[in-house]
Image (cartoon, rainbow, N blue to C red):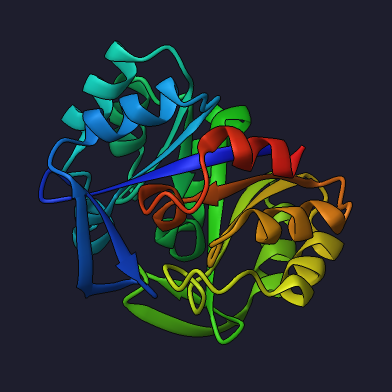
Length: 240
């Protein structure tokens, strides 16, 4: 498993939200590149970058920051937020993204998903974000009636093999993951997935690793790292 430090960008700054609430926002770095550099210097092997402005508006707003990060740092980066058209996906890849993370459009635009998978299947990750077990879309501002396992099965039937599973109810709360929910997702994912939501201690990371799910490939951590609850090296050691 790999630890993915999260860099969420809003209005040009590295921030964290609480349960996806844009009004509950904390700025941790004025410059996203500074945040990225600090995680890489601490030993990060991969970065998870989300354009929150793009997620809310539907089109990327911060790819220039992605380009700065990928140009300055020698680690792969996966990028999401507002990637709802093929030109937007191509722009993210040109900005240096190793992987692109799709959200809303993966559920609402079948033709778009098929086009992305036809061209970039190995570099495509679909984010399945849930509140109360139901999938949230549009930057977590809308909750559907779709259940995560059903959505994952449907996406896999279309060719998706990599996922990010975010438990929005725990995001930014530092209260630990819902291990039963992770198990339910692991049961249906035929490829691989990364977990996100609620990580607050190294014990939480060890609990995820202790599930011994071979398709659980990584964990995204944001607030706990910014607040120095543990270091990147300690987190990576815990998931290994």
